[in-house]
Structure formats: structure tokens, C-alpha cells
Length: 155
Image (tube, rainbow, N blue to C red; front, side, top):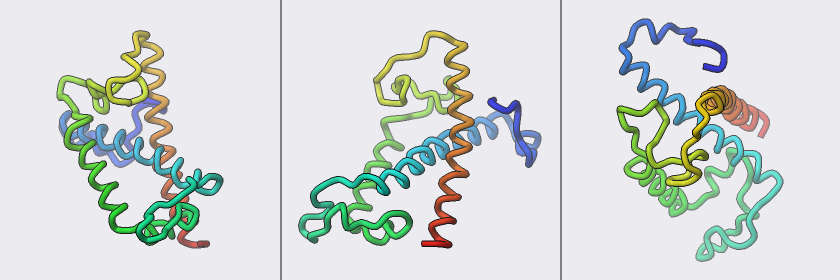
């Protein structure tokens, strides 16, 4: 791991190897989601798509507020689409195989794109990048929580 073995609450001492594996899978999944969320929280401050988010409602992308206020501005049909897409990813595209390392999906390439990029051949570079992913995932989880709190407190 990037900072050595880090388990301040001692979860690894009490659980089995299977429990640790499940926790690592969860950590990687939440970290990857947090990296995308942090990017998605910042980008609308500088760029918004032209056109309509919901033409039948007359709702433009530019009318969606930034930050936490966006949650209540997106129509229910938009939320349904997001939930459906996430369900597809969870149910089929990226399945964790027991023989592979946590977060290492068979059909995900170098960038995690299904069937894209190919596998990394250099084992040292692969290990370094996986450690960087873990460290950046942990940072992103703290960053997005910080952004939520800052936005919630100051608007």
C-alpha cells in the first residue's frame, strides 16, 4: 500500500482474509466513485453543456445550480437514468472474480474502460499505479466529503 499497511481501527485483526478482501473492494469502489464525484463537483463551476437537460420541462443545463443545490434541481427522470446506468454497471459490466485482486476486473483495461487499453505488462509500474490509485482514492473520499460540508455550511 502507498503508506504501508494502514488500519487505524484494527479491522484486519478481527476479520478473515475474505472480510479484508471485501473491505478492499469497497474501498476501491468508493474511491473510484469519489474521484469521479470530485471532478464532477468542480467541472460545473467552469463549464456547462449547451442546450437542454429536459426539453419537455424547458430546463437547460445552464439553469442547474452547482454543488448540493443540483441534487434538487435534476428532474426525477434524470435520477432514474443515473440509477439505471449504475445498476447496469453493478450487475454486468464489471464483475469481480474471486481469482483476481480486489478491483481488478477481467474486462477492464488500463483505464478501467471495458475491454480497453489492455493489461499492463510491467509489474513494477502496475504495482506503483495501483498504489497511486489507492492513495488518490483515499484522498478523493476525504475531498468530496469536505466539498459537501463546505457547500452545506456556506452555500
